Image (cartoon, rainbow, N blue to C red; front, side, top):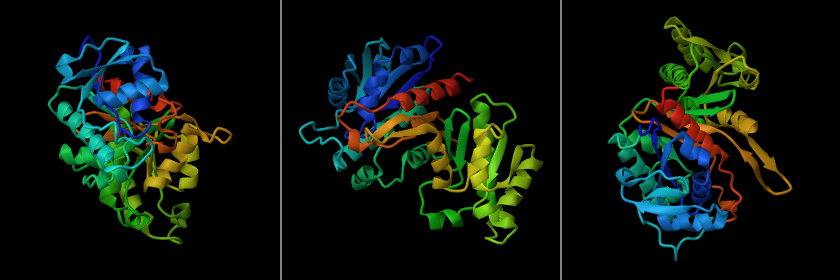
Length: 343
């Protein structure tokens, strides 16, 4: 902490994406500096270009490490990895160069946080295909963080207003996702959710657990995962003192959560949780053919360091247009501050 505000490392994301633009826009917000002491990890040249694209009206100040940061509003401190060739950069395109650059930003921010030189980390969007063709074989940010922090038990928590979701599995095929619904993992995720909600200030949170099958299997008519795996996990969670209901049919659970019945929802697989979450926080403007609003924060639970993130992708289709919203990035910073400050 510096002046009672956490020092946060914010990764720029894929250089060909909207990541640099939303970082520049956030850097132009006085509110950012009121909440925290921000440092961007990225490429100074790319960010300078993003300032021009967005009209953010700030200066980019390259530094080598957190100890050189000044945290002065109007000048964005950037740990400059200088790993992008501007002559080869094509906005909105998948490339190994950008995938490697984005991966290096994430690795750097993890290292700094593990060394306790940062109080928390916030990540911009990366492109999974780009990082993989660059030779870094991870399915997403969550898995990179888990690997480099040697974390075995972790989960992806999505937060926006009164909709909070965690997943039993995320970046795997649907076939694999069904096979991963096991009592031990379901119980582990319930416990991660309980701990995560308490970290963001909810005492004795009430958690709803989704079924895997339609109608939560209707007593075994549509599958036996509920009876064999999910119900035993819920019962054990209740036994150890957690406030848990389930399994609840997914088409009912999320509506009830949105109405305030639950503080958090446990989804069995990626799309089961992401679809209702994004219906609540993402607003598409069909006339403009772009998102009008993009809300939602991704918090990785179980790590020894703080990591929050925007819950949207690289949006290659609008990269370079200066229209990308930085709303989700500001929310991700807000949640990182709340966790770092113990609020």
